Length: 343
Image (tube, rainbow, N blue to C red):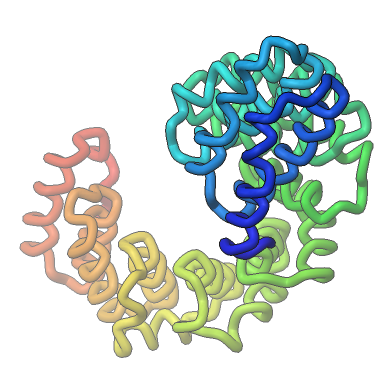
């Protein structure tokens, strides 16, 4: 990346071209230099200077659209970088109109339209970009993520299949396919992709995803083994829950019992403490189960499910009066549980 001083120097050298009176060929050559300057300024974060530099050139009616569209493109990108989305729109639209066969123009316009909340038009521009860039897997991955953002799952699957046919071993394709598979809860489909992805470039994100996928594909021991050496503080909240879910499947209450004593990690939510409580309850550790469910209820006092579990634990401990009071709260929160109590 060029430093700020270099950006200023190049701008001074090329600004004079706007006011000279060269022939057409010289103008085109100088416009190429202006575009190089513009690219350097944008790379340096100097978009405000781009919006000062380019408009006079666009007013030159002796140059045609085939020459001017790259300037429209860059001016639109500069306005966009400044957060001036409405001002960017006509420039990126003209770039598309004047160079309709350039997929980058359609892709740029799609980005902006999403920022303007114009989802339908953005999807249309992405489709045009894909149809023009027949071998480009990256635009398909990008479009696939956008479709997933808007819960267009089937459409995302179709476009990501196209990306995979164009680059079956690209990490970004695998990452998008993992995301798609997790959204669909198709963990078996996700497993080969996350295995390759985590094996080639392990990150905290791929570690969490792989542990979850192993758990959901019937491999709780393997899932837990990935995480135990980091328990508890170096794991994410999701990973700590994965460990407990693996413990539950394996009949191991050691960590849940320890949580009743240690207090756990601050950002663990009600679901985490509720799960730890269930593990203790299933193991016959009733006092610990009650302590943990009460901690969960403190975080989610409107949870009828957690309070229902507390009723069961109170009854098991012989505290019927407390259970009756809690049961009244359960029915206030969720009357559909009326037939759920078993004394």
